[in-house]
Length: 323
Image 1 (cartoon, rainbow, N blue to C red):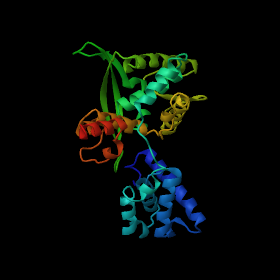
Image 2: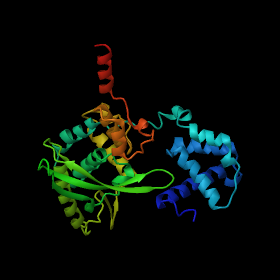
Image 3: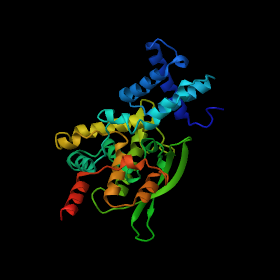
Image 4: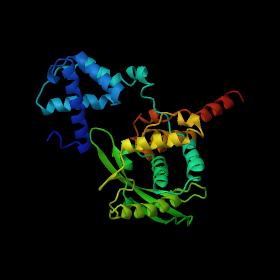
């Protein structure tokens, strides 16, 4: 019953974190249910610095696994430990910001990749794959896990009644973080643009290439195929956070000789969502609209971590101050 309210991926993550805690306790010559308050504090900090696990999920994993085993721990309910977890972002995280720095994905990276790499190379499935992953993640302000939920059947082409322009409707499944994982489905319209990087045009061409790629690899092309599949020998699976991370690193390596500054950005899968929120904010889009598009609750303050002050915005403010 304890696991019934949790998503399978959350249960898997909790087990993995608990195994990490068990190994840490072995090195400390203790067992998990006898670990001291300081040892728990040290482990949470260490797991954050060395492996990038967020503090709240790590703490929740311990409480969940202890409860599952029927252990009553006064340590995990200590006021000091609760305060540590609550205040970590405001106090302790500052000491590790270089380790965990995540820059906003700059649209210039995509432009350089498109103009200097794609236009000078033969059109391939992988090129379109890389391009569309970034374009849709930013256009739809998707979390890394939400990209993996997109299917071929999620995409429907049509025409705008108002402008008669060709457009695409994309059904997105939203993962809303909280006490429970909540899936919200919504149709997001994307209209055709007349620039060189039209998402409707690219998506149409990509899906033709995807059908060919599936058939060449011996897979049936259907509505249930992941929109962004990863082919591994005789298996097919949806793209995940690790794949997106590798994709971003490979793009940065390709553009490094052309634009060294952009190649030095610290990009992670969440950089795409940060980049989207930052661009929308710089365009003057109201905060409540950004929250709605990104599926953040009206009372959430999380968005503040995603909106970065770009050099262009700083220059604009400076010009207004000294005009």
